[in-house]
Image (cartoon, rainbow, N blue to C red; front, side, top):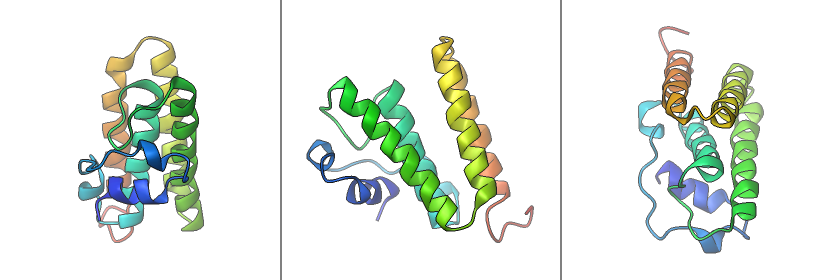
Length: 133
């Protein structure tokens, strides 16, 4: 199951009516060998997209629901990492969420892609079983 399909399945039931029928593959899950980290990065990415751009797995939400849904996916992702005891990855993603919020508030949307790539690379380097860990 793709990370975004898994995200739709894990979403609160109030969000499921807004799920797209066939979400695309996630941007990051295929790059990470650790399925938990892959799911989490795509869940947090969907939260970011719900807040600031266009989401991939959900549509038709009013702005208030999009904001709440985005928050719920941030929390879902971070909670999964915390449950797995992956506190370094929690810190990385918490910093990413904060940095993206700051960039967006300053009109620096063009900077967020680099922030996402840097975090994905950091999580790739430190994933369990990685020779760089």
